[in-house]
Image (cartoon, rainbow, N blue to C red; front, side, top):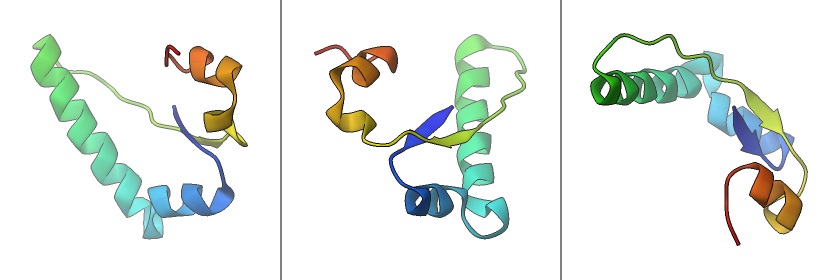
Length: 66
């Protein structure tokens, strides 16, 4: 799951025809497979979460410690 703050960011991340998100997913999958030493199936979702960078609770939920 990839979180962005605005719909416009979501469009940029996905790219025209899904090109950008496909490239991101392919590279991430290759890195994970190299790390684990086996094949993996990777699902990627882009979700808009308004003002998540300004919320301590959301930052903690996403794995950032303050």
